Amino acid sequence: MLRRHFLSGALAAGAGVVLDPVNADAASPTYEEAVERTWGPIRTGRERFELVRFATLAANSHNTQPWTFSVAEDRITIRPDFARRCPAVDPDNHHLFVSLGCAAENLVHAAEAMGLRAEPDFAGDSIVVRLAGGTAKRSPLFSAITERQCTRANYDGKPVDNEALRLLERACVEPGVSAIALTDCARMKVVGDYVEQGNSAQMRDKAFMTELTDWLRFSKADAVAHMDGLFSAASGNPVLPAWLARALLRFVFTESGENKKYREQIASSAGILVLSTDANDRRNWIAAGRACQRFALQATALGLKYAFINQPVEVPELRPQFAAYLGLGVRRPDLVLRFGYGPSLPRSLRRPPEQVIA
Ligand SMILES: Cc1cc2nc3c(=O)[nH]c(=O)nc-3n(C[C@H](O)[C@H](O)[C@H](O)COP(=O)(O)O)c2cc1C
Image (tube, rainbow, N blue to C red; front, side, top):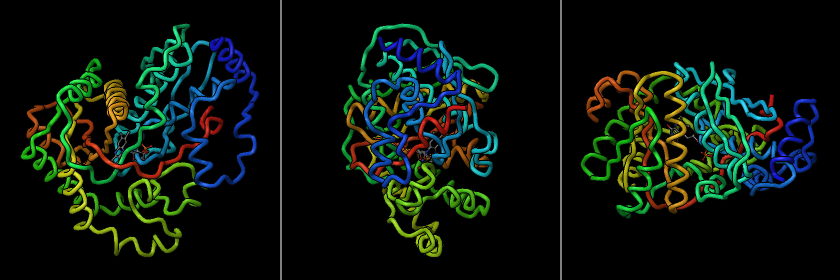
């Protein structure tokens, strides 16, 4: 039944017909309405849109949502949208392809919930997700898709037990990807030192700061007007009119203040996870994205929060030193995440499916 819905939706897409009952009256929603449209539970009768919506709920760098989707009867293709790349923080598009991998992982779990078996494969610059009939199953990882968020807050300092750690490590199992989990304070503090060094380098880099500021959304209205970018409340920062926030930014957003914040956040976390890949290419970056998103969904299913602390892998001069500290040799450390028990913060938004279906 679900499959028939999906196929008829796909055919409508092929014919260029756009039917979207939920978003037909989408003019100027409030932030709260936009959160519900973005993160609400799966809606029946619009499977084609829902698969794409659930894919877009993945973590993605600066929330630029650097993707487009095309939908056919037996596949969904996820393509990079290079117009949304971030050349300062991500000059080689590493984060962009990791983000596509995160979206593919969400798609796999959403498809399974709709009775479809989804198999992503890297082809050219794109991910082709082949769809075939399967058994409908709403897994804990599927249920976590709409709950997951990157929580940039202090956590409560409580440790994670061994069984949960085992599940988190198992979630990272992906061909070509290795995971290192650090839970002892001394090693976490060293990673924190790298984060601070990286943060200082980035905050002194004019191009980095200009790019970051362009993606900041300071008020609810600003966030809803764009439906992308980094909403200040989602990072635990105050909500202000954009003109005022921009005028105050250099006084409140300081290198020493941010370094202190990262130190406290890491000290409050239960552990740190570093993902690295066998080869430094797009296929492996996508694999890292899939592992990272699966880790995030598993953490969420366990009631844990997580956040990226990628500064040591984003600053090119720091990355080899960080790799050496972790004993990675010539392997590239791809992603750095902290995790622990913590509060929920306001949600980030996503552009609706009809804006990303090409
Ligand atoms: C490849 C990649 C790199 C990221 N790097 C950072 C980072 O360095 N710092 C950070 O706070 N968030 C980082 N994020 C998280 C995104 O900012 C976040 O996913 C996005 O703003 C959407 O928010 P949400 O995941 O809470 O929905 C990264 C995400 C991805 C996929």
